[in-house]
Amino acid sequence: MISENTSNWEDPLPRLVALYFDQRLDESELQQLQTRLKTDPDARVFFAQFSILQTQLEWVCTDSVSPREMTHIPASYHARARNWNLILYISCCICLAIGGLFFMYLTTPVAHVYPTADSHWESGLIADEETLLSGSRRQLSNGAIEIRFTSGSIINLQAPALFTIQGSNAVFLEAGKLVADIPETGHGFTVETQSGQIVDLGTSFSVNVEADRNTEVKVYRGKVQVAGTTDSQTPLDLSANQAVEIDSISRSILPRDYTSSDFIPLIARDYSVGSFSENVVFQEQFPDQIARGEFQLLERDGTVFLFPELREIQLYNNLNVSISQPGSYWSYEQIETDTDFIPRGMKVDCYRLYYDPASNKNEMLPVEGTIHFHQPVLGMITTRNRLLETDHILNPLCQGGNCPQIKHQEIETRVSEDGSRQDIITLSEDRKTLNFKLFTGTNYIDEFRVLVAAP
Image 1: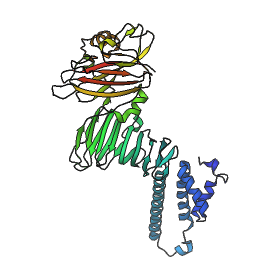
Image 2 (image 1 turned 180 degrees about the vertical axis):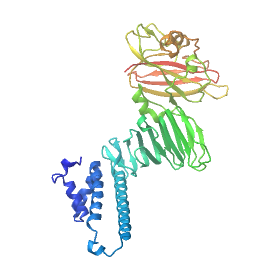
Image 3 (image 1 turned 90 degrees about the vertical axis):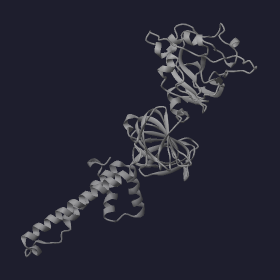
Image 4 (image 1 turned 135 degrees about the vertical axis):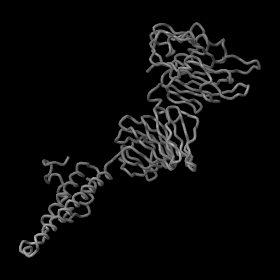
């Protein structure tokens, strides 16, 4: 830090600045001064202050008009000259101050990069905690990076991606996908693309600039405001579990199906869910209507919704479940044996899987998927009766003691009339990977609970 106590020649900065204004720096000293100004904010302040002082001294000391020369000049001229000199002096000071501040703005880091081991720019390797200035343009050609802005905003990008930093709380995304996680300090974080603009209103969201230059926006948590680059359409507020696409030609905003695979790093940070297949949608808010047993709410063919139903449930008694051991299950004869229970004393997180196809075709519609958990799966509840029996412990609507009337459907672990298997659930030997294959029709749903050891 530059202060009165440091303005001695032990710190080379004052000497370098003085030589700079005397135009006596050699090439190595000029490089040393430039490096110091780029990396030290206090040095930039000192440079700006020195610039103002230098201007003041030059104005005072270079006045070539002596008193003798001025005796024949009218008094009114002296006043006008002094006024113009004062105006010129003030203007120079203002310009130097603005220039100093602008120089500080251009050379102050606004973000830092945290790359994975295999990451590199198009121009070469990425240094850990590499600094980015406003206006820095980078092309990520391999790996993945996290960028932390000085505002507190965080974005994650995977290669390939091309972007430009626009200050301490904004980025221009030319190509690729980013996931933004914005705290309160970063409220208003802005992502611009060639098609539109996305402004954070307190949220986690993703932006994907596709090969055709369309911009896809998904919101995992909170809300964003989405606008095309034309004034013909009112900006749209987009809430959690919603998605849109900004057309690159018309700039119109079109609704799209929401998927959550972009947000796996954020989900894995906050929940025991490590990853899942593309046809699984993780939705953080568990709708009360589904908790009550209503259906035809989240209808989508080939898509299973995964909800965190209730977390950190302390079991004071043994909890009966349908499945408690690793293996594949496709028959009612395999489940709900005397040993299928989770012992008391355990603490569990409960997740609900929900499949409700939208098609009006009078046929069974299949879906297959995989979910990987950080913690072991202790049990699953798959039948209607056992779902009802455990609602008083696991259903969030029953936590106050007054459980409303709840309806449930189930998965059919049985063999069809033609001999084919219907719903199949497989739990890996380490209890952390769940595979499922479900069949159901438009007038039905498949649902079951998964109980995972709480962290």
